Length: 326
Ligand SMILES: [Zn+2]
Ligand SMILES: [Zn+2]
Image (cartoon, rainbow, N blue to C red; front, side, top):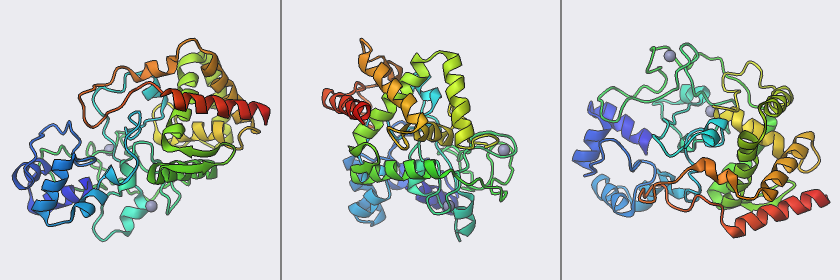
């Protein structure tokens, strides 16, 4: 829906905010409610009435078509070290990424809904790493402020004006492609089978990633982390990739998670993963939740407890038991 709004605004030579206010009756100049991702029921009905699109059609243009937000799972670079070290409930990071090949094939370039999921890192059609930074100035890819009347030109860097579609696209590693496919299936359908784990719900998958990655970033000593990241970088060929850093990029953080989870419980990466899961399970308090800070309970976009529910914690312990037995 954001893509549609940006293109509509460009055609009408107005800002997205002006369309929201004048045509859709939405007054949210700073975009705190993120109504274009997950409109509330009234907004959904209002957009449908004013655009003559059915409620189902509007819903399908938004993230509402997929599993509800769990532990802020849709936020940008959600599984990165940066997110585990800092309070992520501050200003939401812009979350624009692009597939150069998809955009070059479009008659009128538009953003795919899946790219809005803040951990989505690989184009499923071209199997290339999505572009998140300008190849020239290294600034994050973003669109103009929703209050500005700047035309929507997703292929141009907002900072330096460079063409983002320079034709240099990086193929993704098969492990990362497999992990993202499993995560996306769980996000779309609610559950998915994950090899080595059995069937996991989206909530269980997020919790599993959180306890393993949270323990990795918060509990390991720096030397231990550097050693693991060196192995991941070697095994998944991250060296020289613009999005290869696990600390602050979508692709790098999925690569780290893939290294822990693939060929579970038999791979060298999974033995480190099992060790991290063990540390979490014997920790006195669930320190992993600490990194998520205190959520704003009044923010309708981000409801739900930040602690992992007892039933999901029990499932993670079960997964650990069977990994040790396997
Ligand atoms: Zn593509
Ligand atoms: Zn640039």
